[in-house]
Length: 176
Image 1 (spheres, rainbow, N blue to C red):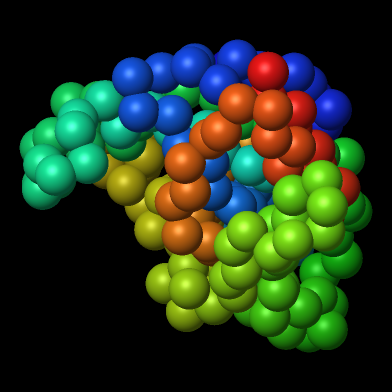
Image 2: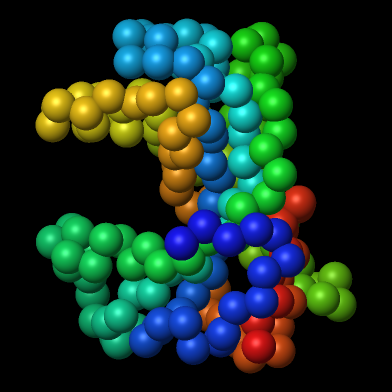
């Protein structure tokens, strides 16, 4: 499901293929399972990972999806293009940087396709990590070193078009 930057994907990878700018982090320590603050979460992560998610919402665009619909289709998860991990440091500066990531997705001509900021993720990406961790723990699961956590979309969903090149900082998709 996770492909490297520069991957060539078919435009029809799904019934309703879309793309969105996302953000992932990588767990660096199992201490994340006991973290209670943003700073403790940050100390238990070792990288932020540029990520373009390629969901397939399956349903016609006129259908209003509810939570049960999204769960049934695994939130449409199909593919993802992963950039090179960027090492994190457990500093107040990194905590601030994570909350202010400006994401711009461009096409091959430099035209802006979508923009967003990381504070759209529950106001701070580290809060999403805590929420995901707590949800996993509620069903008896623990995070492990090396786990990748997709924190959610930062940009609006956009349709995939044949012949398109999608450029996200450190991540590129070519659509055939």
